[in-house]
Image: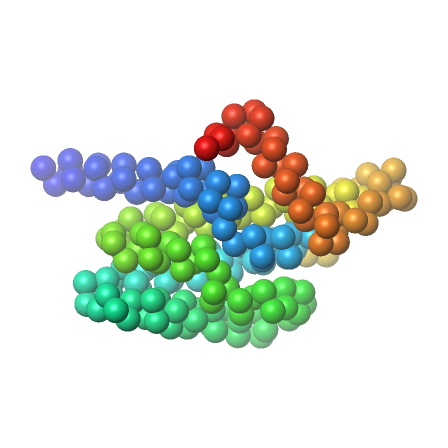
Length: 213
């Protein structure tokens, strides 16, 4: 009986994890959190830094909110969610400022704005406040990795087309000589974010990864 429950729990865990990556992908499916997504996806460095921050805040807030779900009055749940999220964002900001100052400066205002990121608050309201800690952890990792994958895909094309190569934390991965000599700098500018995002959504719908409503 105990083994059966453990198998069911493990199955639900992986189902929620997979759902966050594919079915409820925050960027390509739910189309949430586009402000930081489009703003910081001009390089892989920024994409990886923002993704790590979102996963940390999402995981920490989901755990705490799930633990408090039965004792949090309904009328004050949103303020409680924001306080919990703000606490983890403050920790994240201090760690980045102390140990990763170049990344901290590069992410700029978008790091503290994780507090009001609709992905974080949305998962707190829709999932963590209604489910167990284990499932909330699965949801946090799933949605977090889904966000990471989306951000990496967008930044890959933007940085490659906009600079002619890819670089991660000072290490050059590769470059395309033709693009490096004449980069399409529009792709690392704000219009480029909308162009790449629109083309990716159109491509995913065309090949059936995303379904038309």
